Structure formats: C-alpha cells, structure tokens
Image 1: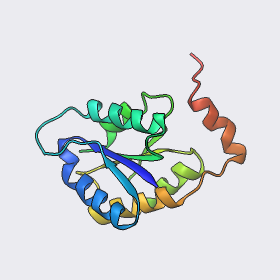
Image 2: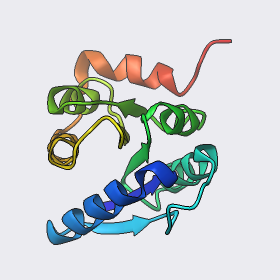
Image 3: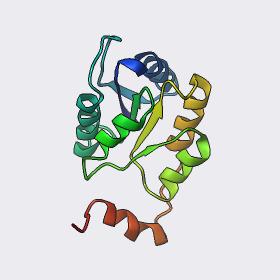
Length: 145
C-alpha cells in the first residue's frame, strides 16, 4: 500500500520509526517531512498530507504531531480526507470500518511507539464496512452549510 506520512517537529522521531517499520512490512512510504526536529507549523504538513491523499498519490495517510489534534484538524480541512485521531487500536479499526477514514492521526507525546504501531496496523488491515455507513460517509465530503 502507498502510505504518506507527515508530522511537525514534535513527532519527527515517531514518524521515522513508523516509516521504517512500514517499509519493513512491505509498504511504499512517502515521508512528506519534516526531515529534522527544527520548529515547523503542523498545518503546513497536514495540508501537504491531505493533498497527497486527496489526489490519490497515497492510498492512506498517517499524520503526527505532539498531541495529534492540530494536524488532524489541518488534514480534515480537505473535504476528500477523513482523518481520525486515535490512541488505541479499536478506535483505529472503527475509524476504517464505520467512517472509511483515509488518514490516521496520532499524538507523539501521548502515544508510545508500540501502541502507535498497533494503531497503524489496525488502521491498515481494516476495510470499510459500507452498507449503512456509506450514506453517512458520503455526507462528510458534502457538508450542508
């Protein structure tokens, strides 16, 4: 699977660990940055990740920042993205099964490496359930204003 990863400075180390692990698992990983822990703004990298997923350049995305909150908000500004901030594997699986999430967000200051891997594994291995969930998911990309 083609997976794009992006973070802010607070999550560079977790992003690197996840990228290496995903490559070892056989995935095609596109690290969208940043490359160092120098201060950056999470919206810039969230928007970059959202564009990659929305364009089809990546099948799924993993967004990381200190808490996961800021970057998930940035990704969700793109109507083609459904980014779920999770902290454990059941929520990661449900985000796929019920919400067809195409981006997973994690907080590097709140989630350890092993738990992050478990969340990513659940996210990548769960299919969208469709059925009664499909109409709801369709509405997410077409908000009634």
